[in-house]
Length: 415
Image: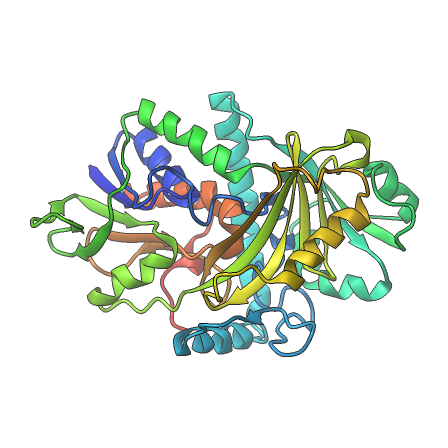
């Protein structure tokens, strides 16, 4: 089949690769000039355990994780917030308190585990390394910190993922660069944890997809989707381009593209920040991934750089970065790993990017109800962690095959 993919972020690129591997003629349309230029550009990079990604799903961080007011609010309300975003926030908060949340987390864990395995297989087959590091450590300052990860921890352990309780001395053996001066009662160690450079992975996989026949059309904005026959309307063109099938992987733009078809996709862009800094001293820097559950911060090693990510905002803001959020990120790296990175270097990169998410934190993957029009979007902060698994499942669904992982929880649903 000739299949169009809208969007060349990590989800669109992985989808194009899987479809090309299956022998389809894949055409990717991207409004930017390269792959992974928006939400996939400088995200945290944590792949596994997916449930340990801060705000991976509502309610995942314990009883306080759905607070929306006060100093420790989970999501900050920035300027320019819309009524639709406030409605999304209400739904997000409600989803975090529903009794069915445990089943939703279990489904996310299963997809995350499948996706990690698929990513490793693809990486081995293509002999590529996207600055991968292994092992994840959740740092616990006090016994109360455990409450922030308890819901995710229970799901992960019930699924059989090895996560070890370690004391402070063992944590510092796993990560020798950890400051001896910061109070630490212990940690949770996931030896199978993994992180990497999302943008680098997407760019390498783009070339692999092209070698298998996929075509990428950059600087090409899709302004509409037609059903029966399936077609895309491109900005500046008078005639729609027709395809056998269309897969919308356009992140935040997916909702706008589907709305004229009558598909309600309550998606919001939750903005986060990252700081990427070059190494200063390897022995003082993190070797794998570190999660600070109290401040909802991740620190990941990416080759000769370290990336610190966190923060969550609704609203486009006033064009300026939120100083307190960045201060938290700087304090996290300098506090946990003093001397590990060069924060004064001209190579330090500060980024604010969108994490398009649905209220329950789970992506929408599957048919839209219109013949030939499919969706693979709404992965939120877990896009890198879920992309390879979602893409493989998407390819199987298009081929009318049962995916290796249960995708029923990720179909279009009501909120």
